[in-house]
Every structure is written in structure tokens, then in C-alpha cells.
Image (cartoon, rainbow, N blue to C red; front, side):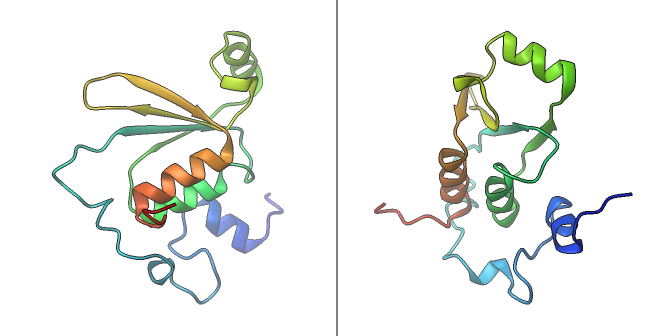
Length: 129
């Protein structure tokens, strides 16, 4: 049985609210940049360990912006093999694999960078920053 707090469990399951009693829809400006249908959205895959920690802000932002992404949990021998193969920049996770409409892929590391990118996609990051 999980011993995580109910709020933490709800966040892990992609709850629509991340703060008690406050809808996340009121926290950011317009999400028009994330709903612009003229631009094809990149395909996103977030890789992280089975923990709520460094990838949570990115998950929250992607969920808030209704941005589809694959959340791949890596653990044990598979994590070890991928790490040894040099799949992770700086040899750590989380990482976000971004595939554009032409099929080229870029891997971004560092949780702060991932969170800022996700916030921009969700329309929650100032354009002049």
C-alpha cells in the first residue's frame, strides 16, 4: 500500500488542481500559444524515475496546458543500461525527448529547463523573459 499523502497521490495521477481550492486555469494567462492549431505540436516524451520530484513541475505544466506527452518511467536495469549507453545528457534524469513534425529528435535535460519549456508550451511563461 502506498503511504504517500492524498494530495501527492492526486498530483501523480494528473489531478486537474495542484493547489487546494485553486483551479490551475486561473494561474496563467491565455493558453492560446498551446492551442494554436496552425503550428504542429512536437511529440514529447518525459523520462524519469518512479518518483515525484524533479519532473513534477514539468508534469504539472504539461497537464495544465492539456499538452499530450508520454510519461515513461525508467528504473532498475533498464535505467542502468540507458545511462551506460549515454542516453541521458549529464548522465541524469529527468529528460524530455522532443520530436518535431519532420522526425528529428532533441533531448533536453535539467529540470528547470524542462519546466520552462513546458510552461511556454502551456502559455504560462512571459514572452519577454
